[in-house]
Image 1 (cartoon, rainbow, N blue to C red):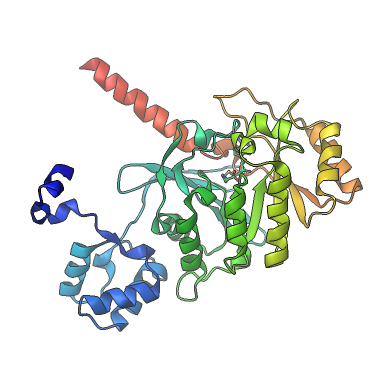
Image 2: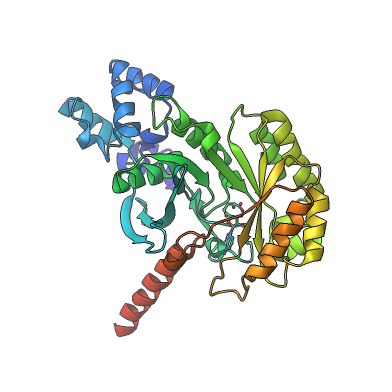
Length: 373
Ligand code: SAH
């Protein structure tokens, strides 16, 4: 293709070579502009937008108040990414559902649906794979494949709402991927998700979790959003943090916490500090003491997560007594702390585990096929 362009043969590039634009990631204003440009009435944009983001249509064919001609034009010019359900596992313990979705390019991602007293929550992936390399996390074992488009982040919620028949009220961007590593798409996704004309989920019910990419945390504080920021802390000092999270080599903890403080000052939103407890690594009383000192003047709360062991690593979950001691120490020192309820323990609950297992299984069956040939 490049050679052809150099020879000035661009006119021979066939239409199918040009990637169709993703209509589901467009804002209503952009879509309106787009309709005007193709000679349609502006109100068509509102109709199409409503089909995609309120009626949760799975493609142009469902848009029954558009003429057949317009539907064909839309199909020719735009893509309307929809996920297909590859697998769903439902926990017998707590009803949590873990979804494996297929993307149009054949990649798979996972999302989780959880029921709480305050409503239904969906945990979405922001990337296919991840390049952050956190030692206890299954999502990162095969590295980063690609970023997800805003439409692909949205459609995880849309498909789950259709599958469960229940309204989703909370969204956490805590599945596979590092949202700050896919920043522009993340911000667009949040606007589409919380905008009046879509699912209209309250920004206060949206949480974005980051391993601590400092410049992006400052940028997020300036977006004028009222979402919650969660920081994956996992250690009270750089030394231990570096053993668990390679990103700690790039940003010092002091600077990460300054970025959290700035987020609170700019948005008024308290930060959540996630701390996965790993036996013998970050769960003893000295670490609890150091953590209490570190967070003494921070506006936020600590969410303790007993680490969910993955088979590729030999990390062990802290036992119940260590978790309680850790929690009690923080409480005595006036740090707000909760223990994350483990959801869907019987269905590969940890981030990226279901996808990883699926990939391993398909790879080994591919290999078996090849071996047979
Ligand atoms: N990349 C983002 C969001 C995805 S991970 C981040 O780092 O925050 C969401 C949370 O789950 C993070 O706090 C992550 O450290 C944690 N996590 C990942 N795998 C885990 C496991 N096996 N056990 C416990 N927590 C895990």
